[in-house]
Length: 178
Image 1 (cartoon, rainbow, N blue to C red):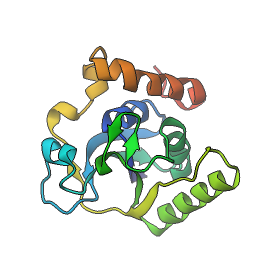
Image 2 (image 1 turned 30 degrees about the vertical axis):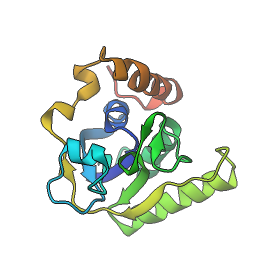
Image 3 (image 1 turned 90 degrees about the vertical axis):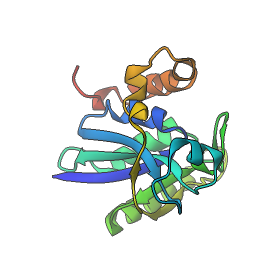
């Protein structure tokens, strides 16, 4: 049974690269959500004028992989305590957000955040938005499979590769078979 999840945690290239390796994930598409402009493009989103976040939309097999499993990876590979930023990427387009597609996803997201806060899992409060999913706008074609197609691009080597390595180390048992 296919389900959909939409997550924002900084640059979509990082999230896409990680979730493409997670067992139970069928498809990952980079795009934009959460803004107020029809058909946003990368340039406008990067300028911060559309209100959109860079997101990935994940299609996953809900019988093999739970939404909480997706969230465990999400909170492990980005910093949910920095408002509108991930590392050197700054702006509302890089915010941490969970765009829920059902009441069950909203409930799970809020519960996971509460559990992480209670455990003091991070050195600061979690600022991740939990908000209803809106219109998903796929990013331009050259953003799709970006890390797979550009592993030696400097940003990929400096930022994406370490996140993929962290995922591979922490979630080795949950990776797709090679």
